Length: 480
Image 1 (cartoon, rainbow, N blue to C red):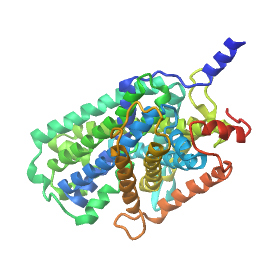
Image 2 (image 1 turned 120 degrees about the vertical axis):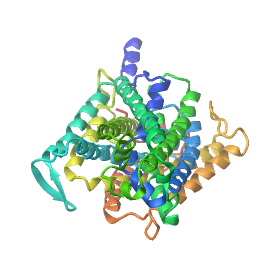
Image 3 (image 1 turned 180 degrees about the horizontal axis):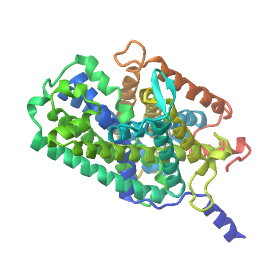
Image 4 (image 1 turned 90 degrees about the vertical axis):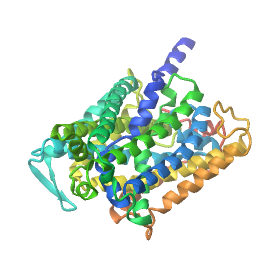
């Protein structure tokens, strides 16, 4: 009987199959999506070469400080769900749900974004891709063949994730390596076919230009927090898991700065502004070859796949963790009997990404903007709970203690809170990078749905190490 119970317990858990490189590839690959391919030209024309670099370095510093809080908390609580567990222990179930729902919303918007970005990129390689018109969305004509590229990819990537995290990790590693090769070719092209004269003007647009680049930072850097989501499936020391969070942020910052400098060296800013996909055209110009532009597009597709794969994994683990705690319906917490992946959560998010391409190319910008405020809300809460746990639970085992035993850690936590609040303010009406109505509508719809689940969570449950158990007792022990 005891052996049966043990076997059942093992069947209900996630598999520990990921190593150091797998975890780092998930985090880094999640951040290097499609934005560096299509947005780099806009950054350069908006802020100038060094203005864009300054904004990106600023964003990297902000995310690095936030990443330090994640590093300590992930090492202390290496369980699937990341933010869900941190906030449950430090602030209680309702705040845990708010933070988890916020970051899940960010993940879901980017997964859907990648499903739209894939046919947008494929059209560069296959100009006649758009056939069989369906309808218009915000003035953009949607074609069946175009939408099916993203929809079919959604089915494939969801299937890969259902088949197991190890398969997803192997696929991620292969694609990240290809992406790094593309980056090395970009650097080589900049030295052989680029010119520093093309980088002028170094600064343009003033503060408005700088903020227009800074405001996309949450969208560009989300993904380092996928490492905490997969912590329960990683077979490396908890301290090392935390370190990988910060390493992933540093690598992503280097990547974005490299992309800006190499692209701006390829052609004058006026030509970049007129380019269809600036980074690809820059690659072609540096090597004098249309084929090399297509190679860059292949790198863009690699970025789409790495980000899509990682964030689908992260979102599904968050929904699984919330269901395991009784915050979401038990259906989301069901694991595949053979592969032990959260099958239903994966299929739910996969279905959303399947639908997204049928809303057309205009959906790209809306998805980028609508998910960003939710991402920042989650980062603020994690930074805040980092400070709270330093005060309320000083004895908690911390394999990786950021800032030492003194006040250094608390200062880092408060710095992360202040920086993220400042970043969130950029989206508000009247600010240089305020959002348009469609993204706010998508943001509102996500949170209206979230409120339905939030008010089902009993109030009055104290935070702490056993908060999940107390919540499940109040809910009638509804663990899947």
